Image (cartoon, helix red, strand yellow):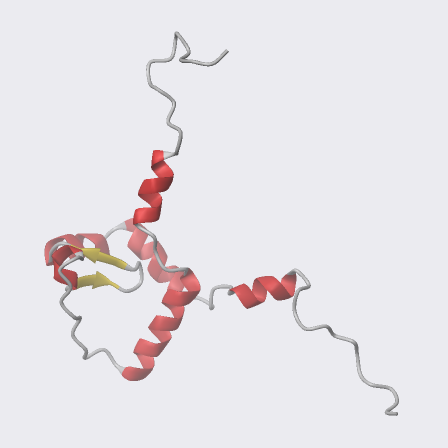
Length: 121
């Protein structure tokens, strides 16, 4: 009943290795990045990034739109020319992305709308 299938070359993995890799590189949601861009536009950009030894490139080479750190400036500049970054720029320049509140309201989980009060007692 159990055991390895005779024609299978690769053992079946109990846990998905792709899920583990994906969770390692979790990115912020579109709405969180959009909010940070709005805050940055209000305040101004003259602030240097803090040095962090755990991040690639000591945390100095960062793309705010894509929420990614890079090892050096050349790689970051190459990323700026990529199709993925340009799509992300277009997405962030457009209307505000949907938030969890929008999803809740669309599902009918928001505040109840009972209409105007007709008589006060």
